[in-house]
Image (cartoon, rainbow, N blue to C red):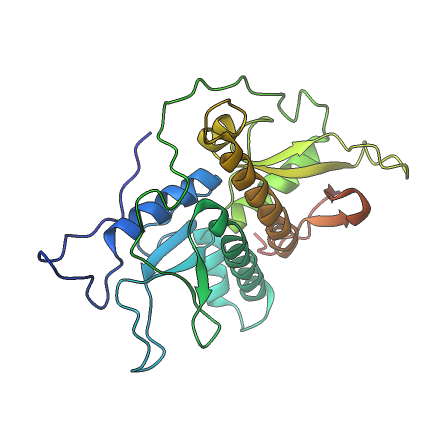
Length: 276
């Protein structure tokens, strides 16, 4: 599958990026890193996904030409409902929580993919600075490795249909993909792992996150870059599970962290963040 590029027309020879432009090499690297992590990339103002845009200067001393800033755009349905809601209420609060969760996740995992993030002086904007140096990050070309077989679907695992629907509705609002089966990219659902407590198997499932198959297959290979890919996969998994706990809860799912076991578990039926 091919993806549109964020690359902009090149600057004249010898000139750096101008104000209001993202360094083209940085935009390309950011786009690939987001896709490696398994997240969608938004184009323009239409979500869902990570929007890569020029940084906005805080003041005249903020020299940010060529610097990228990142936003998370949720589903159009949540964005539209939030725009019509009172500030801090209902869908508006849900959108803020989803955006915060996802921006925090990007700040957490992008360094493992070779891209350092910083906050602007206001603390509100997440930035990635360029230019990008060759070999400075993890580059995984498509089609290099043979893909591994995928795992079971939620139905094959015997997960409650209402529970699966809960996760899919909440994820769709937040703008996050749900993996159709274990091993695929996105939010994964699996049978509850034993924890020594009560049996949750009839009313709950354990949530996880799978990055792109490119990253997962490289991490499990014997290629020279496998160790770095495995480190990046671990960083993405940890960051995204933290984000899911906030984002899906904001969109109506009932979630609990089982900290002693490092498990994120979803229960029961949702309380919709956006009502029909």
